[in-house]
Amino acid sequence: MSCPDCFRGAVLEGEPTGVIAQSLDGAYFASGGASNKRAIIFLTDIFGLPLKNSKILADSFAKHLGCDVWIPDLFAGALPSLIRNRPPVAAARTSSFVKKLQAEKKYERLGAIGYCFGGGVAIHLGATTDLFNSIVLAHPSPPSDAQLKAIKAPTAWACAEDDMAIKQPRLNEIEAFYESRKGKDDFVEYDIKVYKAHGFAARPNFAHPDVKEGFEKAFQQAVNWFNKTIPA
Image 1 (cartoon, rainbow, N blue to C red):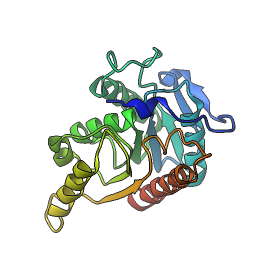
Image 2 (cartoon, rainbow, N blue to C red):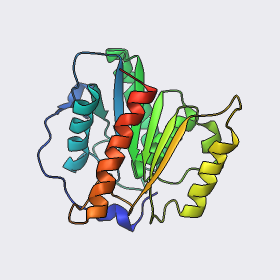
Image 3 (cartoon, helix red, strand yellow):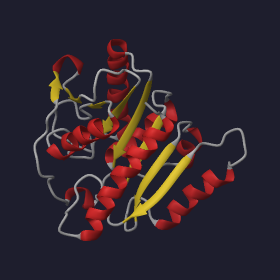
């Protein structure tokens, strides 16, 4: 799912410093050092790999977390299209990529962070596979109740105050669902924070102070979550 805000926003300053790994399906690779204890799979918004924002963010996560960050090509080299590339389709590509990556790198733990469309991919994979040990969702596509129930990995949510994808009543239901499982065997650790307009985490317009603040806080929320749930 996408929305009008997915097609607004700004381009981050700077240039990516990672590389394209042709042997791994053309994924972008930001090195965080020699350790294979953990790595992050970065799932992009609808703009995919061509927009440099995701690559710059991956570089920054690699630096702050001290681990490798990979961005698979959710759209298989084609122009992004929600018609040809629904989250389940992109999720199948991502699953194939992760299995290929793990056969080569053998990371002990994997985290996933998904932005908007990529958040929907992370939700789908979290609900249908055990690929990830920790998940962060930034203004994601909305989950179904069945998906929420099926996700076993600790999950952090960086949501938007004004978001057509997940409106406040639905966000309240999501939080209530997590709360209802506290103290039970199926409880999943979670963290929900609400920032400003949709898109703040991936394509922030720093001319708006509240958007800049949301971007910075959501980035730190993700860093803190991964350090807590899949520590180095």
